[in-house]
Image (tube, rainbow, N blue to C red; front, side):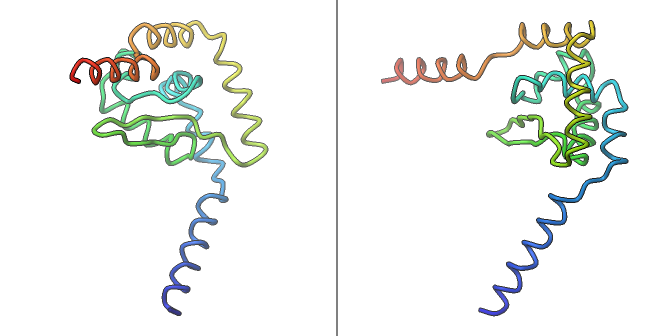
Amino acid sequence: MRAKQLCQAIIVICYNFFVTSFDSETFFAALADRTRLRLLNLMRDGEVCVCFFAEALGTNNPKISRHLSYLKRANLVAGRRDGKWMHYSINEPKDTGAKEVFSATMKMLENDPEMKADRETLASNCCMPMELAQIGRSKKSQST
């Protein structure tokens, strides 16, 4: 029993270190790249499936994966697996100063013409979750 408690304590310490530690260099480097800003811009309204990023940005999947990995290292995005697909969403910084910088950065991106065009491309190519749920329901009802 003592070993189990020790393991739990180590997990809590590691979790607190990685969740509460803030690396300003990685944070600012993540925001210093146009492709990463474009990815964050696409996630501003919620979770996006990785399959839509390459088409919305007009680039290739390896480049998207590399930049998403960098954003994950900076704790600015979180990934969620759903079957074979990965969905990414913004993970706002916990650090107060970083949160202010991040919010101001996202606000600035709203008026950038390329960022607006990216959001329009995503909206025209991406199924919304509600539409997917309705498609799933109609397939079930047809099969019964």
